[in-house]
Image (cartoon, rainbow, N blue to C red; front, side, top):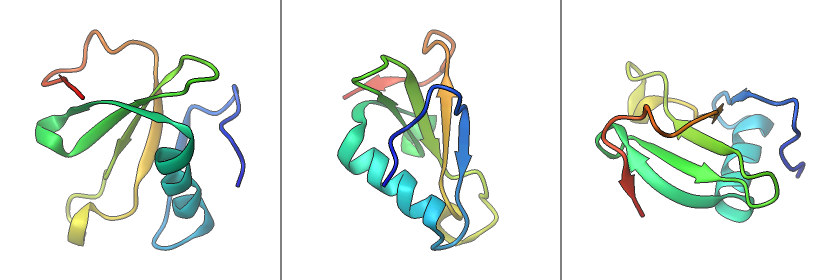
Length: 86
């Protein structure tokens, strides 16, 4: 699998595609879990090599289980509401 690159700002998966597998690999093996937000529906991670924060969420609430994941780089965690550090 491929690590995050500095030019990437958002990665959105589709049902059981390679992008979803990559997001799952990144959040399980590469990124460090930092906090939860959105009443537990989203997780904030930190990339230990770059220091960038990444938010994993499920943007398709109309689909069962929230649909495929999305990983978005965030510049600051200061304006994230309901942030609960892990």
